[in-house]
Image 1: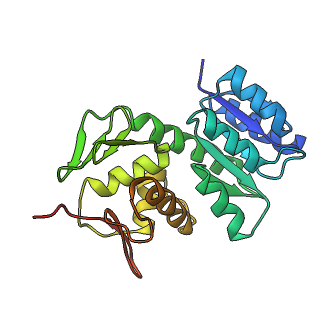
Image 2: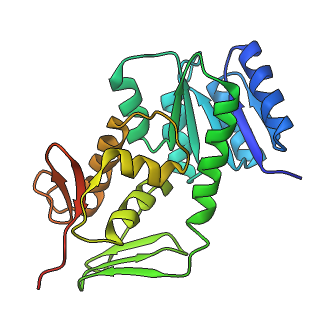
Length: 230
């Protein structure tokens, strides 16, 4: 039996289309048409990934994403008809792993699903621990981050971004390079998504997120992880 995907959307035509493509791709598909049903199904069906529409009746997609993040780390791909940048940033800051704007290609959605699942699996397959200086340790197999001995809870996407940069302290990564590192597939992507994730990471790892010591901005280019003191 294939991995299980929960598709949450209140438009039956979209649900059927996405379901057909995912099942053809070898996935088991669960569906829900509103936020409350999505949370019930997520709790009982324990999906490996959730495809989540933001524009749901009643409990909307952002509320569902908040609840899912409080309860676990299941990967989330957002579907949205909203075009405002702020909606996408809010969703990404809540811990969504990727997003697609309607109308979208179902083939692209399946590719995104596979890429996010590969990334989630890849976080558990390496057998290395990344250390930067004396106070930063990233245990890749366990997806655990420690800063100054304090354990930091990160989403899968946040951990992937942080570990990508921490492997090469001092190297400057463009937003496009970081998107490629966390998505694993070549799509025209939303580079401001990286800014949202970096903002979230800084809130967790930095004593003062407005004056970061570890995750530094290189203005006009991207980001880098600070080199340890000599």
